[in-house]
Amino acid sequence: MQPAGVAAPLKVDISEKTFRSAEGVTIVALRGLSFEVRQGEFACLLGPSGCGKTTTLRILLGLDRQFSGSYQLPEGGSNRVAAVFQEPVLLPWRTVEQNVRLALSARLRHKDLDRLFEILGLSSMRSLYPSELSLGLARRAALARAFATEPAILFLDEPFTSLDERTADRLRRLLMAVWAARPTTALMVTHNLREALLLADRIIVLSPRPAQVLGIFEVGLSRHLRDAPALDNLVSDFHKTFADAV
Amino acid sequence: MMAKHGSEKRDRAGLRTWSASHSVRSALPAATSLASLLGLGLLWGMVAGMWPSRALPPPLEVWRVLLKEAASGDLVYHLAMTLWRVAAAYAVAMIVGSVIGVLLGRHRRADSFFNPWLVLFLNLPALVVIVLAYIWFGLTEAAAIGAVAINKIPNVIVTMREGARALDHRYAEMATVYRLGQLDYVRHILMPQLQPYFAVASRSGIALIWKIVLVVELLGRSNGVGFQIYLYFQIFDVAAILAYTLAFVAIMLLIELFLVQPLERHATRWRRRSA
Ligand SMILES: Nc1ncnc2c1ncn2[C@@H]1O[C@H](COP(=O)(O)OP(=O)(O)OP(=O)(O)O)[C@@H](O)[C@H]1O
Ligand SMILES: [Mg+2]
Image 1 (spheres, each protein chain N blue to C red):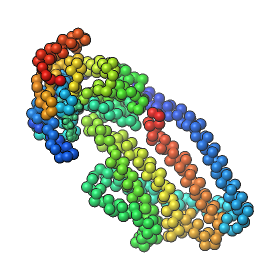
Image 2: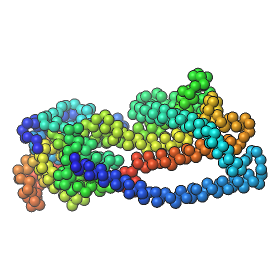
Image 3: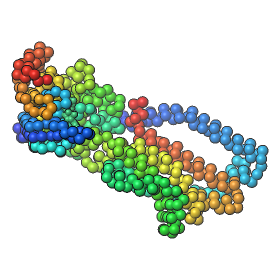
Image 4: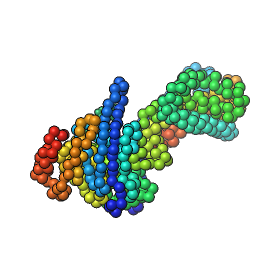
């Protein structure tokens, strides 16, 4: 486990991000988006579909450098980032275990992954190829890869979409289990309010495109107390503050 | 550490059981092919028996010539010379063609500039390239191999360029996020995606190359199967011509069967398992 407190938080200050569509029309995806994620905190970016959540993550991951503004990633510790994309993005020609190990730094290449695979219920699937996995299992493998790298910060882009509700729920609990085993500063994108309320310490609520921060919702309740009735209460609390968001 | 070891063992075992079941499955088509070839031989024997002529010797006589040439060591020598030229031209064509093809596939500007060159070379008759190579660079081994390679390179470029254009950017983005090294990127992300295209280029490449090598040998070499065929053509010895041809075709088939196909199966094992 990485000692808490040594790393700086994630600071985002994007003044503008525009896309030029195929017909030459300019689309403003983000404007004046700024927020912070504290060290060791699990934060959610909650916003309607198409508001610019994936765009924000791509900028923070360094995959898109055409924007104005700045951001600061957590420093210290491993200094690495990890991502769970909207799709699992596993290499089909490598086994589950090879996919995970490939993402590791040279220092960690041969580390013991038994416990991580066990928590995620992947122990018997290490030598399978991704084409032999269901989407739910592939998502778990993507989670395993992200956590195995022991990142300074973890980005998750709607990692539970296109799953049936039961599978999605099981995966959310698995995510919490691996996260609890090694609390990492995390920023997860979602448009599912209940999901955000179940997982997050804080929810950063975004406006429709161009995305801006409407406000912050602190989920005060400790995670193990968030059962169905508690979530219902949180939802109504949330709607009191953000009447027309999501 | 231990866990890694275990999974590798499982992997290897998985491969072994798979190849065993494969040999059972492939036995039947092999028997069919053998019967079919035997039939062709019989037909040839019958035709040669009905219309005896120097132009079409019976299979047995060809077989006799084959044994005689083999015994004298000529057959092996000329086969080896041709085979080495095929291998050299193949290696040069695949390496040069792949590098240029991938570069053109990744750089749109360079591609649109060089595309007319490519079209020109694609349409250049093999004979012209060979003759010019011999005129410009002399009747040398390098000119011969180079001429064969140049005939194949444009095809490889086109195929590999297609592969480079079809690269999935999501894998590259994953590699960026997880900071994969250059070597890991090439080995685990670039090459597996290009492999099917490489296989296609490679397959059509061998077939084309060995045919052109014979022409190159006929025009400007003093050994190899092509040279021998030319020699026996001048004294109208059809049995010898057929003996050399069949020996070489047989070798190319063996290479395809025992080298190319197993390699390809190994490279695409992840795809077969899902089937
Ligand atoms: N490459 C692009 N070219 C043009 N427009 C784009 C491009 N990528 C995204 N956009 C536009 O930017 C806006 C934000 O897209 P983004 O993918 O970030 O949304 P999102 O919040 O992740 O949505 P979802 O919840 O559906 O995943 C959308 O309106 C989209 O049409
Ligand atoms: Mg998105």
